[in-house]
Image (cartoon, rainbow, N blue to C red; front, side, top):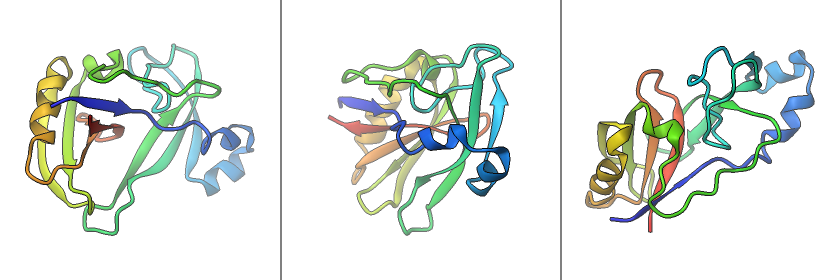
Length: 155
């Protein structure tokens, strides 16, 4: 089954970069500096930040459905980056070189399948998840820290 991976839009995060730390805290966000590459994946560009690059670490609700699977976690976002625009079937390098957790949901936000996969085999694993009965989309997470990475939709 064909899929397309979607990054987060930059607009909701843009105003946060100019806030003082006290105001950032009200948004459950803090400033960080990338200490390694790979290591700090921006959820807007779906690229690893360069060592020394500033980022925001933000609490983000990635599964907002009113179900037992409602979920949120920390994500990194870089300033003034373009949203990743991926072709059908394209996998960004930041996902390719990590162990991932895949969680398939139906259109009501109920989980219908889950699996772990090596990013090198993401195409095969996404196809299997999206082929599950009722699967409407898949959330991709970084397995090690559990952070939301991106969403994949059937095409």
